[in-house]
Length: 148
Image (cartoon, rainbow, N blue to C red; front, side, top):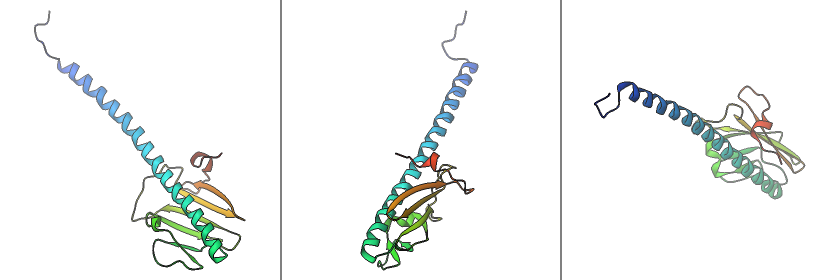
């Protein structure tokens, strides 16, 4: 029969190991949800960009070719103050449509899911489409952008 009222070293080691495993598993889930949240924030910026482009087209008769965080808007430049967090590359911009690729800027590094490194916003004759690409340029829209 045991006369002591404490825990043995083996029991304490097992308890610490269990707590460590649980902490590791919960941190991985937390990190994944944080990455998804960052991509949702980037997607919200993409929606802001699409709305800004529509307003720009109404005002100037064409979509903007450049996006800036400050300055004065003109026929070629769209001003979005929240664009400091993102690098926006606009291509194929004219009066009918545009294509924009959005990535986090180097000054504001943002951890994103592996499959969702680049957000693509396209407009053709006023119809907006959102897509995503991985860092290796694979189309991952079905994993990153909800449809419906």
